[in-house]
Length: 106
Image 1 (spheres, rainbow, N blue to C red):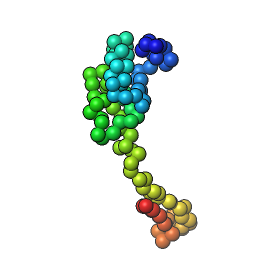
Image 2 (image 1 turned 120 degrees about the vertical axis):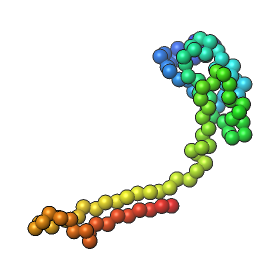
Image 3 (image 1 turned 30 degrees about the vertical axis):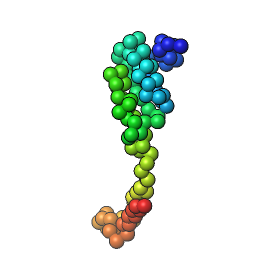
Image 4 (image 1 turned 180 degrees about the vertical axis):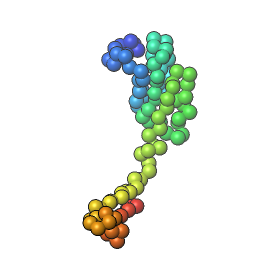
């Protein structure tokens, strides 16, 4: 099936992601898509690493996504908890002694 068949699956698409394609297949499909749809943005993703990213660069590939940028880092648990403090009825000031916050970094 040709790129027209692929494009008909998502009419009006602005971008197509070629996910888990080999570099050679990415370039073949991207070129065919660009011939048929010159304004289409083509993204290569999946299986892209720091070692092979250069193999995905080409004139018909507009974006190369590298998942390891977000998948190889551990998350940090950060939170801020604010508790309501009773107001002083005489002057409507908050009693600062009762304000507590909590942060956690892990």
